[in-house]
Length: 490
Image 1 (cartoon, rainbow, N blue to C red):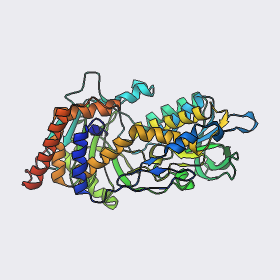
Image 2: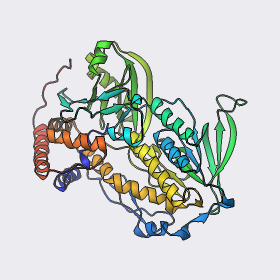
Image 3: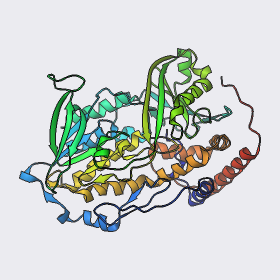
Image 4: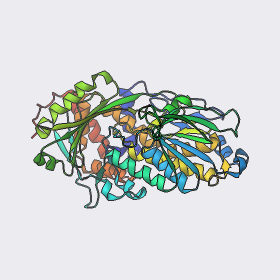
């Protein structure tokens, strides 16, 4: 959900403490160097070789006018965005608004991606989203430990602050339609493959199945081709664009979710509340959830290390939350892969990746909607700037401009959340400590501020030192003492 983003504002003292503890628990953390194609660069990474850092030489070369060449025939730059989720839709919207010839290809216009559906408050204003898209305004978050200890979070929220809960099929369609209104050409089709240009001015030739063609098979569509200058892959964790540009593999989690309609009195309990459950019974390395939607709840879990056991963990969350979802009618069952870290390559020639396709989902919290939308917009803004509003051709160094900016702004958050997941999601004793720490008002304050506004809040050195002490004390206590009896949720 992202509420655990204490990572961003934590002072060096706390960060050092977390890093030290994580190193002791996870000996496989290491730094590795990766050669970036076509430029002398280096990649700095933690745990999975994820965050690319392009050298100053590449950045300097990217701004030189000699790296750009005029688009053929005086026409506008042509860009194809594959995938119509928040990332692809926001990217296409920004490109089209700048006058760039934009194509947005989405295979399923009413797609209901399995997703908790939480968005930070800042996203509503930043992306100009109507408040009607928000099904529920969550002002209460209940953290539930392996022994069912409940900690209520939200006491630091102001009256006008909340976490927005949306349905992906509604959010995605709104942004996608807005992109169309601003000039993007929306194509209901399935991207199949593309031919890579052999020369710097040659186009990519995309092959896709057009489902909007009335004369074709509704299931197979009509095979068509499209010539473009730039390709942006926003087509999710199983990205075909990523495969085409040989972006490399990454570890992924499986998220499983059931949408469930419960009685009105039970639904009233979730009116402004979301629940997060931790424990070996619901996930060995993540968390389970009950999130409110417009007229139902989403009950789900996820895991990386035991994907085949996902049904067992889903039964675990059903059992843990049984008194609160009893008698619920299952409306639909959803499952989807979630990336665990950025891909080794996110740029290849004039093609790049955004959102889940690039691997922009945070560990520990599993937040991805905001970062997908933000990466799509940042990518488009770099293209608009570097191509001078679509009047000049771009190259890979221009696309690295977006990668550099995104990594600089959000890379540290991803790395620290990765460390927190390794620290607190490894055993039930550590999970009990995680929930214990959520009782601290200081933790709630910096956590919610960081999540809601995606900015580093003012640090309190005294609070940071006190938090470090409580973290170590709680970890010691829960690892050396007998677990508390299991509580019954009411």
